[in-house]
Amino acid sequence: MTKYVFVTGGVVSGLGKGITASSLALLLKSRGYKVFMQKFDPYVNVDPGTMSPLQHGEVFVTADGCETDLDLGHYERFIDEELNYTSNITTGKIYSSVIEKERRGDYLGGTVQIVPHVTNEIKQKVYEAGTSSNADIVITEIGGTIGDIESLAFLEALRQVQYEQGKENVFFVHTTLVPFIYGSNELKTKPTQHSVIELRRVGIQPDMIVCRAPVSLDVSMKQKISMFCDVSVDYVIDSVDVKNIYEIPINYYKQKADERLLSQLQLPKRKINLSNWLKLIDIVDNLTQEIEIALVGKYVGLHDAYLSVVESLRHAGYYHNVKIKINWIDSEELVKQQNLDKVFANTKGIIVPGGFGSRGIEGMIKAVNYARINNIPFLGICLGMQVAVIEFARNVCHIDNASSTEFDELCNNPIIDLMTDQKSIINKGGTLRLGNYECHIKKGTLAYQDYGISTIYERHRHRYEFNNQYKAQLEKNGMIFSGINPGSNLVEIIELPNHPHFIACQFHPEFKSRPNRCHPLFNSFIKASKKHNK
Ligand code: GLN
Image (cartoon, rainbow, N blue to C red; front, side, top):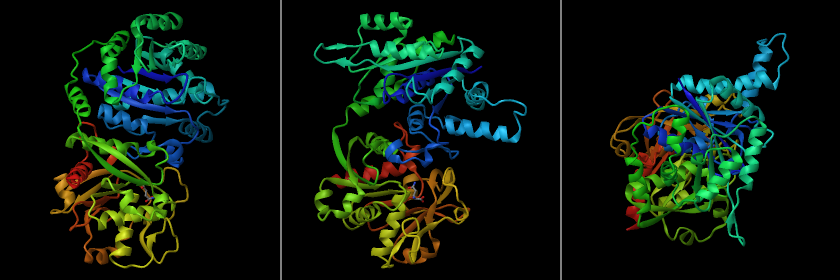
């Protein structure tokens, strides 16, 4: 039977609820439990796919092609389990489904209401995560902050889950902020007390309170929170600011957070094995050499827009024993820059990640050109591959006005064009080429050297593709098409010989990198960048 853990947040957003949920999940998995994770996002969008990355951060894509919140990236990186479409539920998804049922006549004769129809739909998503994953424990994080209007239906549904499943099968973790007030120089518990009152107002009593604080909470502080919030003092856990997020699970472990949770859920403690995780922390804490990687993109104003890319660079850094310093370069600004030698003075590798729309494209092309001509290791991802091909077409093959129909619908040389099966699609939401697709890798290429196998599956999120009509011409000029989708002939990987390291892919390798197992393409990119450093 599956047990359910719900993680809510109070006081402010950005407390690291996702990391809290992931850390607990990691500890439970390290004790041999099968854990599955889920996030509820109370916004009305059906998925984050239509939101600006500058507002929402990156869209994480699961293997089965679901566009999800970036917290799912943390989940997958911490627990190393593939999540799926049951893992990210929004108000938009819930209401679409309820309205579809109403139109179909499923509720004939009834008045459709928030309680029970909407809450039933939410509960069904919780239970579905349990049954489809067959997990011992499902951990569901609820986005937003307690008190938000949008989350009310979700919280009511969770209250009902506890009512239906019993207190021994459902566990509520509430994360809050314990601020330090300068002047009086003390930590304050009042915001935590108030947010627990808000939670109780909707009928939920937290079982555990995780307090984000700049320093550890002493016993008297924990006792105060315990008394006011009616949570046993052993279940008040502090979450202090750390320099490396991988330390957080260990911090919870030391406070026995996972043991308490298991005890309340009446599950045996089981032996824990954290050796790999401790090894990782040791590596991260002892990196000596630092290398600078230039990340050229249009969303650099919000670093979360490239979260998985940055994490993947770091993972490869752990593998090669180097600390990665990112030089964030706004591609729109780069267009105006005269002196690129100055911009890239300390750069050992250039990466151009994914993106949408025409803004900032010429700056990306300029960066690719600089990397190609100056023999700087280059990795292009999705849009990054598309601009790399355009740069090559324009400057090596001399194809005038080579572009993508995404930026210039009427361009006379559409090197990148809308995929054929996209041409009849009108709706923007959920209609990209999404999730895992097969790619065959040509032997003797850099890609083959990186992967060491000839069939790979990688996650995608795009609408445009390389236009195969130009393939022969680009090949003649030296570009190697090293990865191809066998069914559609779609170009998945390109590379350039006679360059220390120049490779780009149509898919998103960053979604499959793990802290203990860096992705082959990031691995070789950082290896080459480290070498360039010498
Ligand atoms: N905008 C491009 C496309 O839709 C690239 C997408 C991406 O980088 N994720 O094909």
